[in-house]
Image 1 (cartoon, each protein chain N blue to C red):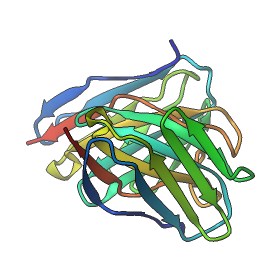
Image 2: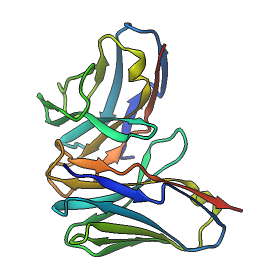
Image 3: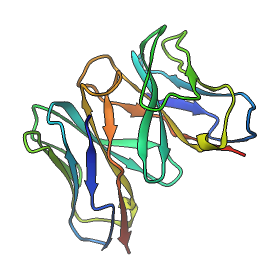
Image 4: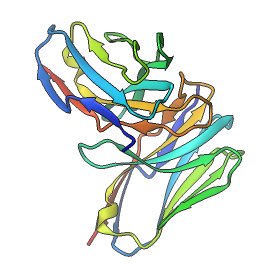
Length: 114
Length: 113
């Protein structure tokens, strides 16, 4: 069964720093990987979707990479801002789940200090 | 605007009183799912549906029912809620296919006392 791990579980950095969030998964037979942002009491906002054939995706200050063979993805946030404070979730879609087959990590709780 | 809409956003109820959480999507997606999110456990899939009248159990289906009579709607039914069903619930939808993007609703915070 697919397992997704996110490291670190929590991270607090000063504003302006570049940072990397890590996601690893145990079964490399995935169709895609999605990074989400979750604000307290709010829903999940999709940030980036990487297909299994892709190596990376970029959106603004965010860059996500995928190394399917090693079971790893990273989310790079450039020039962090207090508004980036949220929980970031990684989810992989593979053959192990129902319909959408999404397996989630437990998230990285990020705090950007002004 | 393309979206997944859940109602209600917040609900406090008593043990044993039947309730329904509605979910509707306006993107004509085939796939819809329900998840619950609990501290330390992350998001876990409750039920999913691949199309109208096609539903199946996810990882934690006990105590829940679903129906998919229309493509856009996928209600979650708790026939006899218990305190261990206190959680944050999310509905999701995606187009058919193995490599499509999932879209999530805003969540429903349920408390069962």
